[in-house]
Image 1 (cartoon, rainbow, N blue to C red):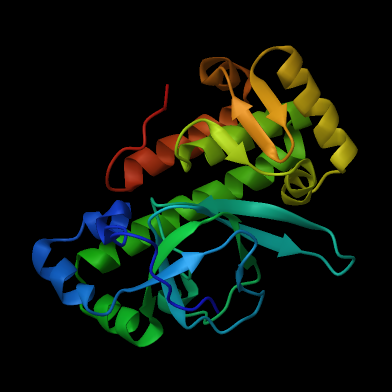
Image 2: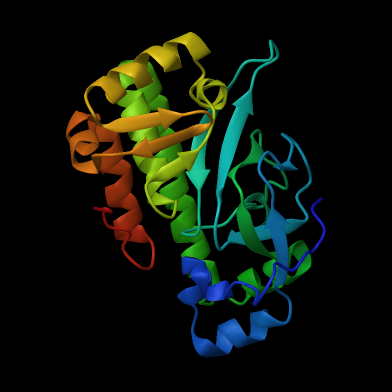
Length: 248
């Protein structure tokens, strides 16, 4: 578990997380003393498959991947979470654990809330319970659509979807990620990732450097992606507080 560590300067505002920002003042102020700032370093495994989760995390920056791993060691990403949501839904859904692990894909910060406090807040039936259930519905939509996409669409389309969804949860148009990591997240060989990224670069949609991808033309990515991206984006805009909207 990452220890609490304050960044230089002022700590990030908890309301950078859209769920916390949506709470009524009374509810937000009641939670404030129980929110603990933690760093989310790149590659941190926040929980393993089957773990009894003790904290709910509300990211203010960074990206967390939900990853399903098979017995043969292969794995694939089932969903992404950024500052629109939270990590650790098993705490209030009653299942106590999840079959996926959670790993930080892009470094950032989060405010965590203990299992005890979250269960109490959830029992009150207020706004936090409401947005938590809406986020869970949106997350289910993302997971379901990812499964459909992985089965029916080309790697080129899946790559565009992944780039756009990651970009939605990032600051700017530059992504810090290796091609090996993308391959693990999409469940494909690194060589296949290299080939598809090469095509996107040839068409001037992206630019590659070591461990970094810069998106040059988001509009063209959106034209090239399969319908799965729009379906998931539409559900998030419909269900969650504060519309995401496309970044130009």
